[in-house]
Amino acid sequence: MRMYDIIQKKRDGEQLSEQEIRFFIDGYTKGEIPDYQVSALLMAVFFQDMTEEERAALTSAMVDSGDKIDLSAISGIKVDKHSTGGVGDTTTLILAPLVASLGVPVAKMSGRGLGHTGGTIDKLEAIPGFHVEITSDEFINLVNKNKVAVVGQTGNLTPADKKLYSLRDVTATVNSIPLIASSIMSKKIASGADAIVLDVKTGAGAFMKELDEANELAAAMVSIGNRVGRNTMAVISDMSQPLGNAIGNALEVKEAIDTLKGEGPEDLTELCLTLGSQMVVLANKADSLEQAKEQLKANLTNGKALEKFKVFLESQGGDPSVADNPEIMPQASHKVELPALKSGIVSEMVADNIGTAAMMLGAGRATKESEIDLAVGIILHKKIGDHVSEGEPLLTIYANNEDISDVKEKLYASITVSDQPVEAPPLIYGTVTE
Ligand code: URA
Ligand code: CA
Image (cartoon, rainbow, N blue to C red; front, side, top):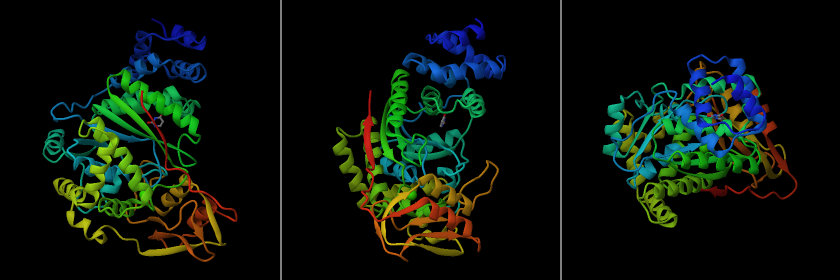
């Protein structure tokens, strides 16, 4: 087999065989096929697309390029949730203990944040003592015992994806549905889940800004998951504005605790109930979505979800008293309100720009090496569709720096107040199943 022929075949719009896809992934991972040939193939895929069979074969080949996490020692159907990335997306912190409180095993492998999106591990590390450095045996034992544990990324997962992603980044081939879908799904599948609930974001703060692109990506990922034997479904949700009110690590933990007490922001609570009920049904722990949602709602108000959160924290060294005393987490030295410059209806709160403002405060990493400040961030007091009066605070900035004029400028540029009536965007646009 020759890479030249594979490139030519895709260039001419033909379908690659599974053997050809494996040849290119294996050869590239081993360093036997050069970047310039793979670049040419990626560009051909960008223009010619891939069939559902090709996408599934590409994903499987990437999964097989490295280690695979074996969760078979955990009893029950392991359901993972993946979000395509958002700002102030606190759902994992809530969903993990919430669905575990109904007996769904949650074996979560999480990462750190980069750029304007936050990472679950960073958020959890705002809790004194909490750590994710546990062995795989401890991880499996904890999930069997408590139904929930979070571990940092371990092993050499999908090295083919790492190489391809870096190459796509410099060859203008990131924005391709078959390449994005296989990249995301390969990592989820290598992480060992039996079933996957995807939260595909759409709107200004999302990777897929337009709804039809988000639908297309969701359908591509659902098809791959089901073809490789993992029960997969997707929810399309709004990321035109940040989710919930808190952006920043300790602030989002506090928001998660409020939500686990049944006192969280409406949009965040609703999205968690929607994603959570899909997870519960995929795990066979409820007969219908309605039943699952009722049970989840009950556990937010009867204390069971919060209790599960405390058990989870304590089992990984975290101080469970944070649930009653969130002030034991790092606190910012300055709280500064950002007043509205005129009266009207909030019409825009561009999520990724607000995420960037939080990063400028130190809540996120500009580069992989940056240190983050767990205390800082933003609490929104208004969301799209809300009325605001001149001088009323749009949000509060939590900072450890005296001079935050650049952050204020960025935030004012991200928020629009209109004279015209504006409706809040829908939170959920739909679901995609096979
Ligand atoms: N996220 C990924 O993991 N891969 C992509 O290709 C795009 C976004
Ligand atoms: Ca939030």
